Length: 543
Image 1 (cartoon, rainbow, N blue to C red):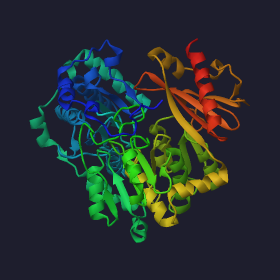
Image 2: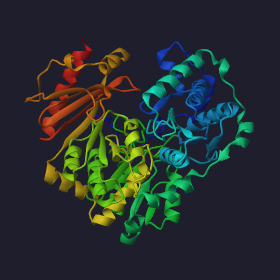
Image 3: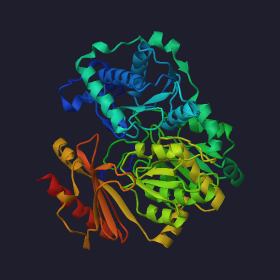
Image 4: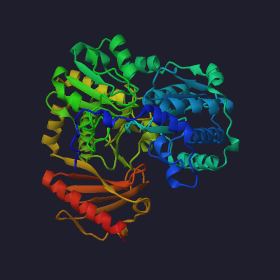
């Protein structure tokens, strides 16, 4: 149930005490024996709050040292590209990382102290650096908890492929970081004032924004005069949207250039928290209210790896709906892409995408949750597009080369303007046409409480653990614990019928499990699927 003030402006009582958050970062020392205070890498790195002793100086020093050792073991000897977002904890963690990296002799390329760097800009920098190289490869770190609330911090590693680290890497890094939490003797640090002098200040912004012409038809957007409203939502894209507005000749307005680590200008998310979720109608309420000012209005989360698309006729698009439109458009508009490049989707994304891929005659590659699964395909060109239901995606450059191997919210939001310019119709109008051809979709994601032990059990489920044979009045046709596209474990399960499906998987950062569900009938049928899905999963977890 939605919070009573969801979608309403934040009040003083909703705001964090920034000084307290920063003080806790250095003052609180984690207990390595407490599972809640250890380093844990989810699908997007280690996240937590200093106030919970889950994201503190000791965590970052240990994790950075673990990355230093890991990259050495892997023979990575090139520079490390380091970026940060606008969360209060990102600056201190970024400085801690520089201190450890410098002491270890790692060459660091980073923005200035007063600059912010989106995740896709770091990925793009790594991809550009390593293209054509076989030695002195670069990797990267992004200091961001993505769309998480202002009290949180986050820290994620991108290996030389430029995308999110796989579980083999993150497991090794987390294990070593936790050893270092218990025994930090191997950690060396150079005081930031001395280390900063040796950091190569890298201009991510100009490099990334200039390169956009290789991924998008900017000429079409200019010629059509598409009126664009870009809302950085207080995140790392703010300086990028300002640069784009000034230099690329687009009719683009930066809706809100304010940066505030409290995010006092936000409307509350569905649960009543401040969260920079550009796929949430409640978090995006201010932009939605002004949708008639622009042909396309867009939002990005704090590290700009996610996108939100708002149109005058449709309001905020469901991420699945926009992914389907983007795929339908791109594979018809990019004649420089490989003829057999496929469509990548997570198995909790809409089945409407399956129908669009079939209509295009393109292979469909269905993978577990996590953008890391798209990295090989985006590197090789076997995938033209990879997208997640949580509003994260990337695609190939116009000539078929790799653009990024991480989610790129800036790219996807500008694509909406290209689509509008080239087709003369909004993305939401194009989605209505897709539904007219393929049928309507009712889709939702909900959370249910789960203990640490229950989440672990859910992640280990096998198909034989499910005893139900029907779902919402239809026979169950498949129970999956591995993704069809690559055979990788889902870390949960997916149950399918002829006209519906649900998937359940544990959260990596919260004491909940997530239920994704879709009906190709109607909203009432979806509600029944959700209700029975929870009963099916709870029966297993309670056993």
